[in-house]
Image 1 (cartoon, rainbow, N blue to C red):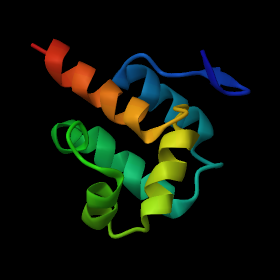
Image 2: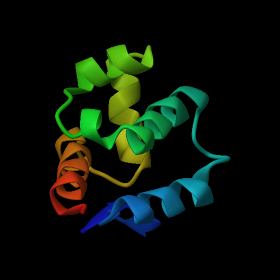
Image 3: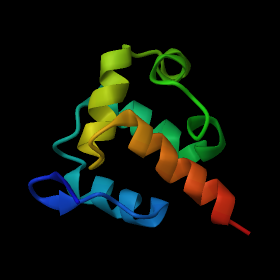
Length: 91
C-alpha cells in the first residue's frame, strides 16, 4: 500500500524514524513537533485522538492529521495503529 508517492507506509517505528530523517528538511516545524512527540511517547499516541494529540502538542488538529500523512500514513487511524502495534509487540 502506497501512502505517498515516494514511500510505502512505515511498518515499524524504526522505519518511521528513518523516513523522518530522510524528510526532515521537508517537514514543517509544527508537524515535526507532533512527530517527535509521537516517537518519544508512543504510549500516548497509541490511544490518542487527533484532537487530544493536538492539545498535547499545542498545535491544531489539522496539523496532527497532516503530520500523520507526512509520516506516510493515509489516515490518522493507521498512524495510531502503528503505535498500538509497537506497544503490543515490544518486550
